[in-house]
Length: 462
Image (cartoon, rainbow, N blue to C red):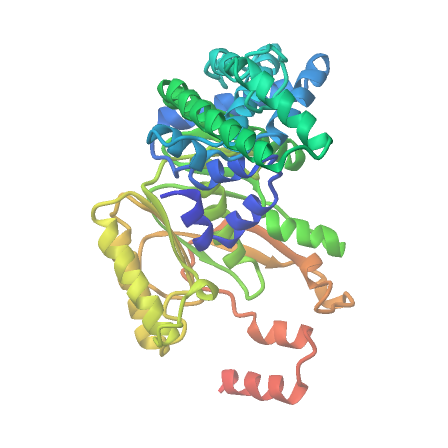
Protein backbone atom coordinates (compact mmCIF):
# COMPACT_ATOMS: atom_id res chain seq x y z
CA UNK A 1 0.00 0.00 0.00
CA UNK A 2 1.22 3.50 -0.83
CA UNK A 3 1.14 6.54 1.45
CA UNK A 4 -1.47 8.20 -0.76
CA UNK A 5 -3.84 5.33 0.13
CA UNK A 6 -2.84 5.13 3.80
CA UNK A 7 -3.63 8.77 4.53
CA UNK A 8 -7.22 8.22 3.40
CA UNK A 9 -7.59 5.69 6.22
CA UNK A 10 -5.64 7.45 8.97
CA UNK A 11 -6.39 11.09 9.75
CA UNK A 12 -3.46 11.18 12.16
CA UNK A 13 -1.03 10.12 9.44
CA UNK A 14 -2.66 12.65 7.10
CA UNK A 15 -1.84 15.32 9.70
CA UNK A 16 1.79 14.16 9.73
CA UNK A 17 2.00 14.39 5.93
CA UNK A 18 0.33 17.81 5.87
CA UNK A 19 2.93 19.05 8.37
CA UNK A 20 5.86 18.17 6.10
CA UNK A 21 7.63 20.92 4.16
CA UNK A 22 8.52 19.93 0.60
CA UNK A 23 10.54 22.08 -1.78
CA UNK A 24 9.06 20.65 -4.97
CA UNK A 25 5.94 18.98 -6.30
CA UNK A 26 8.20 16.09 -7.35
CA UNK A 27 9.20 15.54 -3.73
CA UNK A 28 5.57 15.42 -2.65
CA UNK A 29 4.81 12.96 -5.46
CA UNK A 30 7.69 10.76 -4.31
CA UNK A 31 6.24 10.77 -0.81
CA UNK A 32 2.71 9.89 -1.94
CA UNK A 33 4.03 6.97 -4.00
CA UNK A 34 6.23 5.67 -1.19
CA UNK A 35 5.26 2.21 0.07
CA UNK A 36 4.16 0.88 3.45
CA UNK A 37 7.12 -1.49 3.73
CA UNK A 38 7.13 -5.00 5.15
CA UNK A 39 10.85 -5.48 4.43
CA UNK A 40 12.99 -5.20 7.58
CA UNK A 41 16.21 -4.54 5.65
CA UNK A 42 14.55 -1.82 3.56
CA UNK A 43 13.23 -0.10 6.69
CA UNK A 44 16.58 -0.24 8.47
CA UNK A 45 18.21 1.20 5.35
CA UNK A 46 15.69 4.03 5.19
CA UNK A 47 16.14 4.85 8.90
CA UNK A 48 19.93 4.83 8.37
CA UNK A 49 19.58 7.34 5.52
CA UNK A 50 17.23 9.44 7.61
CA UNK A 51 19.67 9.52 10.53
CA UNK A 52 22.57 10.41 8.23
CA UNK A 53 20.50 13.28 6.84
CA UNK A 54 19.60 14.52 10.33
CA UNK A 55 23.28 14.43 11.35
CA UNK A 56 24.31 16.36 8.23
CA UNK A 57 21.52 18.88 8.71
CA UNK A 58 22.58 19.58 12.30
CA UNK A 59 26.32 19.82 11.52
CA UNK A 60 27.30 23.50 11.76
CA UNK A 61 30.33 22.93 9.52
CA UNK A 62 28.15 21.90 6.56
CA UNK A 63 25.30 24.35 7.02
CA UNK A 64 26.12 26.13 3.76
CA UNK A 65 26.09 22.87 1.80
CA UNK A 66 22.73 21.96 3.29
CA UNK A 67 21.34 25.34 2.23
CA UNK A 68 22.77 24.79 -1.27
CA UNK A 69 21.04 21.42 -1.50
CA UNK A 70 17.72 22.91 -0.45
CA UNK A 71 18.16 25.64 -3.07
CA UNK A 72 18.73 22.99 -5.77
CA UNK A 73 15.60 21.12 -4.73
CA UNK A 74 13.55 24.33 -4.83
CA UNK A 75 14.42 24.58 -8.54
CA UNK A 76 13.33 21.01 -9.27
CA UNK A 77 10.46 20.65 -11.75
CA UNK A 78 8.48 17.45 -12.16
CA UNK A 79 9.51 16.26 -15.63
CA UNK A 80 7.48 13.05 -15.84
CA UNK A 81 5.75 14.17 -19.03
CA UNK A 82 8.91 15.47 -20.70
CA UNK A 83 10.91 12.35 -19.91
CA UNK A 84 8.07 10.11 -21.10
CA UNK A 85 8.10 11.99 -24.41
CA UNK A 86 11.87 11.60 -24.66
CA UNK A 87 11.62 7.88 -23.98
CA UNK A 88 9.04 7.44 -26.75
CA UNK A 89 11.23 9.18 -29.39
CA UNK A 90 8.98 12.26 -29.45
CA UNK A 91 10.72 15.44 -30.61
CA UNK A 92 11.08 17.81 -27.68
CA UNK A 93 10.44 21.53 -28.00
CA UNK A 94 12.75 24.25 -26.70
CA UNK A 95 10.96 24.47 -23.36
CA UNK A 96 11.31 20.73 -22.79
CA UNK A 97 14.98 20.84 -23.80
CA UNK A 98 15.45 23.64 -21.26
CA UNK A 99 13.79 21.48 -18.57
CA UNK A 100 16.25 18.67 -19.23
CA UNK A 101 19.23 21.04 -19.25
CA UNK A 102 18.02 22.54 -15.98
CA UNK A 103 17.63 19.09 -14.41
CA UNK A 104 21.20 18.22 -15.37
CA UNK A 105 22.43 21.57 -14.06
CA UNK A 106 20.76 21.42 -10.65
CA UNK A 107 21.49 17.71 -10.16
CA UNK A 108 25.20 18.38 -10.70
CA UNK A 109 25.09 21.17 -8.13
CA UNK A 110 23.05 18.95 -5.79
CA UNK A 111 25.57 16.11 -6.13
CA UNK A 112 28.32 18.51 -5.06
CA UNK A 113 26.35 19.61 -1.99
CA UNK A 114 25.45 16.01 -1.15
CA UNK A 115 29.11 15.00 -1.31
CA UNK A 116 30.09 17.87 0.99
CA UNK A 117 27.40 16.72 3.42
CA UNK A 118 28.77 13.17 3.34
CA UNK A 119 25.44 11.90 2.02
CA UNK A 120 26.56 10.44 -1.31
CA UNK A 121 25.95 6.83 -0.15
CA UNK A 122 22.43 7.79 0.96
CA UNK A 123 21.63 10.00 -2.04
CA UNK A 124 23.61 8.84 -5.09
CA UNK A 125 22.89 10.93 -8.19
CA UNK A 126 23.73 9.78 -11.73
CA UNK A 127 26.30 11.79 -13.68
CA UNK A 128 24.53 13.84 -16.38
CA UNK A 129 27.36 16.19 -17.34
CA UNK A 130 27.32 14.87 -20.93
CA UNK A 131 23.66 15.84 -21.20
CA UNK A 132 24.47 19.35 -20.03
CA UNK A 133 27.38 19.56 -22.46
CA UNK A 134 25.12 18.59 -25.36
CA UNK A 135 22.65 21.32 -24.46
CA UNK A 136 25.34 23.91 -23.71
CA UNK A 137 27.49 23.97 -26.91
CA UNK A 138 28.84 27.44 -26.11
CA UNK A 139 29.97 26.34 -22.61
CA UNK A 140 27.96 29.06 -20.87
CA UNK A 141 27.66 26.99 -17.71
CA UNK A 142 24.12 28.28 -17.10
CA UNK A 143 20.79 26.47 -17.25
CA UNK A 144 19.20 28.79 -19.86
CA UNK A 145 18.56 27.18 -23.23
CA UNK A 146 17.77 28.17 -26.77
CA UNK A 147 18.77 26.86 -30.20
CA UNK A 148 22.34 28.17 -30.23
CA UNK A 149 23.92 29.50 -33.43
CA UNK A 150 26.75 27.02 -33.00
CA UNK A 151 24.36 24.11 -33.65
CA UNK A 152 24.13 25.06 -37.38
CA UNK A 153 26.38 27.44 -39.36
CA UNK A 154 23.35 28.83 -41.23
CA UNK A 155 21.72 30.22 -38.12
CA UNK A 156 24.07 33.12 -37.27
CA UNK A 157 23.91 34.93 -40.67
CA UNK A 158 20.18 34.20 -40.99
CA UNK A 159 19.44 35.69 -37.60
CA UNK A 160 21.62 38.75 -38.27
CA UNK A 161 19.76 39.50 -41.50
CA UNK A 162 16.40 38.87 -39.87
CA UNK A 163 17.20 41.19 -36.96
CA UNK A 164 18.32 44.00 -39.30
CA UNK A 165 15.17 43.73 -41.40
CA UNK A 166 12.89 43.68 -38.36
CA UNK A 167 14.61 46.72 -36.80
CA UNK A 168 14.27 48.78 -40.00
CA UNK A 169 10.83 47.62 -41.15
CA UNK A 170 12.38 45.74 -44.04
CA UNK A 171 10.73 43.72 -46.76
CA UNK A 172 7.88 41.72 -45.15
CA UNK A 173 8.18 38.97 -47.72
CA UNK A 174 11.84 38.48 -46.97
CA UNK A 175 11.18 38.52 -43.22
CA UNK A 176 8.57 35.80 -43.65
CA UNK A 177 10.97 33.72 -45.73
CA UNK A 178 13.73 34.03 -43.12
CA UNK A 179 11.35 33.16 -40.28
CA UNK A 180 10.25 30.03 -42.12
CA UNK A 181 13.87 29.03 -42.77
CA UNK A 182 14.78 29.62 -39.13
CA UNK A 183 11.79 27.60 -37.92
CA UNK A 184 12.68 24.72 -40.24
CA UNK A 185 16.31 24.65 -39.02
CA UNK A 186 15.27 24.86 -35.37
CA UNK A 187 12.72 22.07 -35.74
CA UNK A 188 15.30 19.80 -37.34
CA UNK A 189 17.77 20.67 -34.58
CA UNK A 190 15.17 19.84 -31.91
CA UNK A 191 14.70 16.46 -33.56
CA UNK A 192 18.46 15.92 -33.70
CA UNK A 193 18.93 16.87 -30.04
CA UNK A 194 16.01 14.68 -28.98
CA UNK A 195 17.56 11.72 -30.81
CA UNK A 196 20.92 12.36 -29.16
CA UNK A 197 19.29 12.64 -25.72
CA UNK A 198 17.14 9.52 -26.08
CA UNK A 199 19.87 7.07 -24.90
CA UNK A 200 20.11 9.15 -21.70
CA UNK A 201 16.43 8.72 -20.84
CA UNK A 202 16.90 6.04 -18.20
CA UNK A 203 19.65 8.00 -16.46
CA UNK A 204 17.59 11.19 -16.55
CA UNK A 205 14.58 9.37 -15.11
CA UNK A 206 16.79 8.01 -12.32
CA UNK A 207 18.16 11.51 -11.69
CA UNK A 208 14.62 12.90 -11.45
CA UNK A 209 13.55 10.14 -9.06
CA UNK A 210 16.62 10.57 -6.84
CA UNK A 211 16.18 14.33 -6.66
CA UNK A 212 12.51 13.88 -5.73
CA UNK A 213 13.51 11.28 -3.11
CA UNK A 214 16.11 13.70 -1.71
CA UNK A 215 13.35 16.26 -1.21
CA UNK A 216 11.22 13.63 0.56
CA UNK A 217 14.14 12.53 2.74
CA UNK A 218 14.98 16.10 3.77
CA UNK A 219 11.32 16.75 4.59
CA UNK A 220 11.28 13.66 6.84
CA UNK A 221 14.53 14.69 8.52
CA UNK A 222 13.32 18.22 9.18
CA UNK A 223 10.03 16.90 10.60
CA UNK A 224 11.93 14.48 12.85
CA UNK A 225 14.04 17.31 14.24
CA UNK A 226 11.17 19.77 14.55
CA UNK A 227 8.93 17.31 16.37
CA UNK A 228 11.73 15.45 18.20
CA UNK A 229 10.71 12.10 16.76
CA UNK A 230 12.66 8.94 17.57
CA UNK A 231 14.03 6.05 15.55
CA UNK A 232 12.08 2.80 15.98
CA UNK A 233 13.82 -0.51 16.69
CA UNK A 234 12.48 -3.69 15.13
CA UNK A 235 11.72 -6.45 17.63
CA UNK A 236 9.05 -9.11 18.07
CA UNK A 237 6.80 -6.91 20.19
CA UNK A 238 5.62 -3.33 20.53
CA UNK A 239 6.80 -1.10 23.33
CA UNK A 240 6.37 2.67 23.23
CA UNK A 241 7.68 4.88 25.98
CA UNK A 242 5.91 8.26 26.10
CA UNK A 243 3.93 7.74 22.89
CA UNK A 244 2.11 10.88 21.79
CA UNK A 245 -0.47 11.77 19.18
CA UNK A 246 0.85 14.62 16.99
CA UNK A 247 -2.49 16.14 16.04
CA UNK A 248 -3.91 16.08 19.56
CA UNK A 249 -0.69 17.19 21.25
CA UNK A 250 -0.31 20.20 18.96
CA UNK A 251 -3.97 21.13 19.33
CA UNK A 252 -3.67 20.99 23.12
CA UNK A 253 -0.55 23.16 22.97
CA UNK A 254 -2.40 25.74 20.89
CA UNK A 255 -5.23 25.78 23.45
CA UNK A 256 -2.89 25.84 26.42
CA UNK A 257 -4.10 22.43 27.57
CA UNK A 258 -2.07 19.66 29.18
CA UNK A 259 -1.06 16.65 27.09
CA UNK A 260 0.03 13.36 28.65
CA UNK A 261 2.07 10.82 26.62
CA UNK A 262 1.41 7.14 27.31
CA UNK A 263 3.61 4.06 27.77
CA UNK A 264 2.28 0.90 26.16
CA UNK A 265 3.61 -2.60 25.48
CA UNK A 266 1.88 -5.10 23.16
CA UNK A 267 2.54 -8.65 21.98
CA UNK A 268 0.73 -11.07 19.69
CA UNK A 269 -2.82 -11.84 20.73
CA UNK A 270 -5.51 -9.58 22.14
CA UNK A 271 -5.09 -6.72 24.58
CA UNK A 272 -8.35 -5.39 25.99
CA UNK A 273 -8.37 -1.69 26.90
CA UNK A 274 -10.93 -0.45 29.42
CA UNK A 275 -11.40 2.86 31.14
CA UNK A 276 -13.86 5.64 31.83
CA UNK A 277 -15.43 7.78 29.16
CA UNK A 278 -13.13 10.62 28.12
CA UNK A 279 -10.13 8.60 29.30
CA UNK A 280 -8.46 8.58 25.91
CA UNK A 281 -8.99 4.97 24.81
CA UNK A 282 -9.85 5.87 21.21
CA UNK A 283 -6.97 8.33 21.02
CA UNK A 284 -4.65 5.56 22.23
CA UNK A 285 -5.76 3.27 19.38
CA UNK A 286 -5.28 6.03 16.83
CA UNK A 287 -1.88 6.95 18.26
CA UNK A 288 -0.61 3.37 17.99
CA UNK A 289 -1.98 3.08 14.45
CA UNK A 290 -0.40 6.33 13.29
CA UNK A 291 2.95 5.46 14.85
CA UNK A 292 2.94 2.08 13.09
CA UNK A 293 2.09 3.67 9.74
CA UNK A 294 4.90 6.17 10.21
CA UNK A 295 7.41 3.47 11.15
CA UNK A 296 6.61 1.21 8.21
CA UNK A 297 6.74 4.15 5.80
CA UNK A 298 10.29 4.92 6.94
CA UNK A 299 9.55 7.80 9.33
CA UNK A 300 10.72 8.27 12.87
CA UNK A 301 7.88 8.06 15.39
CA UNK A 302 6.33 10.27 18.11
CA UNK A 303 7.67 8.63 21.25
CA UNK A 304 10.61 8.90 23.62
CA UNK A 305 11.63 5.36 22.65
CA UNK A 306 10.01 2.85 20.34
CA UNK A 307 10.25 -0.88 19.78
CA UNK A 308 7.97 -2.14 17.06
CA UNK A 309 7.42 -5.07 14.75
CA UNK A 310 6.56 -5.52 11.09
CA UNK A 311 2.95 -6.14 10.08
CA UNK A 312 1.42 -6.91 6.73
CA UNK A 313 -1.14 -4.16 7.37
CA UNK A 314 -2.68 -1.87 9.97
CA UNK A 315 -6.45 -2.38 10.04
CA UNK A 316 -8.97 -0.44 12.09
CA UNK A 317 -12.59 -0.36 13.06
CA UNK A 318 -13.02 3.02 14.72
CA UNK A 319 -16.46 4.58 14.92
CA UNK A 320 -15.83 8.04 13.54
CA UNK A 321 -14.00 6.58 10.57
CA UNK A 322 -16.87 4.38 9.37
CA UNK A 323 -18.18 5.10 5.89
CA UNK A 324 -21.95 4.88 6.10
CA UNK A 325 -22.69 6.69 2.85
CA UNK A 326 -23.62 3.33 1.28
CA UNK A 327 -26.83 3.28 3.32
CA UNK A 328 -25.72 0.75 5.93
CA UNK A 329 -26.35 1.37 9.62
CA UNK A 330 -23.37 2.04 11.86
CA UNK A 331 -23.63 -1.50 13.22
CA UNK A 332 -23.81 -3.08 9.74
CA UNK A 333 -20.80 -1.06 8.58
CA UNK A 334 -18.87 -2.03 11.70
CA UNK A 335 -19.64 -5.74 11.68
CA UNK A 336 -18.76 -6.10 7.98
CA UNK A 337 -15.38 -4.53 8.67
CA UNK A 338 -14.77 -6.72 11.74
CA UNK A 339 -15.75 -9.82 9.79
CA UNK A 340 -13.19 -8.93 7.13
CA UNK A 341 -10.55 -8.43 9.83
CA UNK A 342 -11.26 -11.88 11.30
CA UNK A 343 -10.98 -13.52 7.86
CA UNK A 344 -7.75 -11.71 7.01
CA UNK A 345 -6.21 -12.62 10.39
CA UNK A 346 -6.14 -16.26 9.31
CA UNK A 347 -3.57 -15.45 6.63
CA UNK A 348 -2.01 -12.09 7.52
CA UNK A 349 -0.04 -10.69 10.42
CA UNK A 350 -1.80 -7.44 11.20
CA UNK A 351 -1.97 -4.69 13.76
CA UNK A 352 -5.69 -4.67 14.53
CA UNK A 353 -7.34 -1.72 16.28
CA UNK A 354 -11.01 -2.09 17.18
CA UNK A 355 -12.83 0.62 19.12
CA UNK A 356 -15.89 -0.28 21.20
CA UNK A 357 -17.16 -3.15 19.01
CA UNK A 358 -20.91 -3.83 19.04
CA UNK A 359 -21.59 -0.73 21.10
CA UNK A 360 -24.66 0.15 19.02
CA UNK A 361 -26.49 -3.16 19.49
CA UNK A 362 -28.16 -4.62 22.58
CA UNK A 363 -25.78 -5.41 25.46
CA UNK A 364 -26.38 -9.18 25.55
CA UNK A 365 -25.57 -9.73 21.89
CA UNK A 366 -22.91 -7.03 22.00
CA UNK A 367 -21.00 -8.75 24.78
CA UNK A 368 -21.32 -12.10 22.99
CA UNK A 369 -19.86 -10.59 19.81
CA UNK A 370 -16.93 -9.04 21.65
CA UNK A 371 -16.20 -12.38 23.29
CA UNK A 372 -16.31 -14.08 19.88
CA UNK A 373 -13.91 -11.51 18.40
CA UNK A 374 -11.47 -12.05 21.28
CA UNK A 375 -11.70 -15.84 21.03
CA UNK A 376 -10.92 -15.79 17.30
CA UNK A 377 -8.21 -13.11 17.40
CA UNK A 378 -6.33 -14.31 20.51
CA UNK A 379 -4.54 -17.24 18.77
CA UNK A 380 -3.92 -15.32 15.53
CA UNK A 381 -0.50 -14.06 14.50
CA UNK A 382 -1.85 -10.52 14.67
CA UNK A 383 -1.53 -8.01 17.50
CA UNK A 384 -5.01 -6.79 18.44
CA UNK A 385 -6.15 -3.91 20.63
CA UNK A 386 -9.83 -3.71 21.54
CA UNK A 387 -11.44 -1.01 23.66
CA UNK A 388 -14.68 -1.87 25.41
CA UNK A 389 -17.11 -0.91 28.14
CA UNK A 390 -18.32 -4.49 28.50
CA UNK A 391 -17.26 -6.35 31.64
CA UNK A 392 -17.35 -10.03 32.66
CA UNK A 393 -16.31 -11.19 29.21
CA UNK A 394 -15.04 -14.49 30.62
CA UNK A 395 -11.83 -14.80 28.70
CA UNK A 396 -8.15 -15.00 29.44
CA UNK A 397 -6.79 -12.21 27.25
CA UNK A 398 -4.56 -9.47 28.56
CA UNK A 399 -6.31 -6.44 30.05
CA UNK A 400 -5.12 -2.87 30.46
CA UNK A 401 -7.09 -0.09 32.07
CA UNK A 402 -6.69 3.65 31.62
CA UNK A 403 -6.29 4.93 35.19
CA UNK A 404 -8.78 7.74 34.64
CA UNK A 405 -9.76 10.42 37.15
CA UNK A 406 -7.20 11.27 39.79
CA UNK A 407 -7.86 11.24 43.51
CA UNK A 408 -9.03 14.51 45.03
CA UNK A 409 -10.56 15.89 41.85
CA UNK A 410 -13.98 16.11 43.53
CA UNK A 411 -12.94 19.32 45.28
CA UNK A 412 -11.48 20.95 42.16
CA UNK A 413 -13.35 23.59 40.11
CA UNK A 414 -13.99 21.37 37.06
CA UNK A 415 -15.25 22.51 33.68
CA UNK A 416 -15.45 20.82 30.26
CA UNK A 417 -12.45 22.95 29.30
CA UNK A 418 -10.11 21.88 32.11
CA UNK A 419 -11.30 18.36 32.87
CA UNK A 420 -8.34 16.76 31.07
CA UNK A 421 -6.03 18.13 33.79
CA UNK A 422 -7.65 15.71 36.23
CA UNK A 423 -7.39 12.55 34.15
CA UNK A 424 -4.43 10.18 34.31
CA UNK A 425 -4.13 8.67 30.82
CA UNK A 426 -1.50 6.09 31.81
CA UNK A 427 -2.25 2.37 31.60
CA UNK A 428 -2.24 -0.24 34.31
CA UNK A 429 -2.59 -4.03 34.18
CA UNK A 430 -6.10 -5.04 35.23
CA UNK A 431 -7.07 -8.68 35.94
CA UNK A 432 -10.47 -7.94 37.46
CA UNK A 433 -12.60 -8.40 34.31
CA UNK A 434 -14.61 -5.39 35.46
CA UNK A 435 -14.90 -2.03 33.74
CA UNK A 436 -15.15 1.45 35.30
CA UNK A 437 -18.61 2.90 35.90
CA UNK A 438 -17.99 6.61 35.47
CA UNK A 439 -20.78 7.76 33.12
CA UNK A 440 -22.95 9.48 35.75
CA UNK A 441 -19.95 10.96 37.51
CA UNK A 442 -18.76 12.51 34.26
CA UNK A 443 -22.25 13.77 33.47
CA UNK A 444 -22.33 15.46 36.85
CA UNK A 445 -18.89 17.01 36.35
CA UNK A 446 -20.01 18.37 33.01
CA UNK A 447 -22.98 20.11 34.65
CA UNK A 448 -25.76 17.98 33.21
CA UNK A 449 -29.31 18.23 34.55
CA UNK A 450 -29.35 17.14 38.20
CA UNK A 451 -32.76 15.47 37.97
CA UNK A 452 -31.59 13.43 34.98
CA UNK A 453 -28.53 12.22 36.90
CA UNK A 454 -30.49 11.54 40.06
CA UNK A 455 -33.11 9.43 38.28
CA UNK A 456 -30.41 7.48 36.46
CA UNK A 457 -28.70 6.73 39.79
CA UNK A 458 -32.02 5.53 41.26
CA UNK A 459 -32.45 3.20 38.30
CA UNK A 460 -29.00 1.74 38.99
CA UNK A 461 -29.74 1.30 42.70
CA UNK A 462 -32.93 -0.57 41.94
